[in-house]
Length: 151
Image 1 (tube, rainbow, N blue to C red):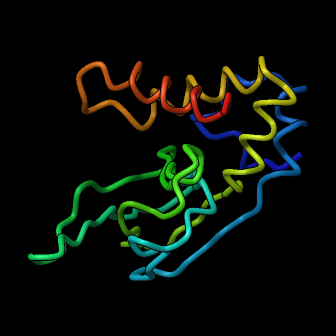
Image 2 (cartoon, one colour):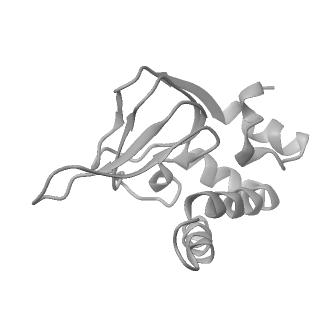
Image 3 (cartoon, rainbow, N blue to C red):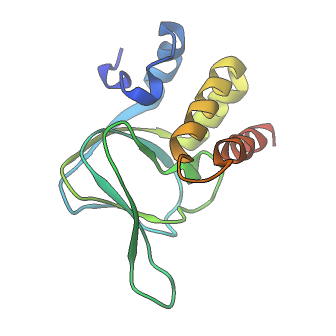
């Protein structure tokens, strides 16, 4: 089993659920000041931070790049890949040395279809992680994720 799976996002999974997920994850590391993906890049991976800090940045067409948030160990980014977005809506840049694990959004969506109980749990946890700053966002994000799985 991949020991990196013992991060907060997945800590409530059973050993059977972890066995389903483990082969789908790969390790991803980057030095500080590395662009992991740019806004507009194909949305392929969902990342779970094991160690390090990243900045989620947005560059409006008519202004300078702004940092929307900083994410740390235990946080998740790249969720456009899970909701079926073709491209990332923001950029991700490592501020420190990054160690993470990542999963292809398509693989996670497939797992949700073939193992609905595990999929429901993961979607619920993903909604909790990506939505803490918005009122009612957990429910909204969960609904977006669930609707994408069903289509």
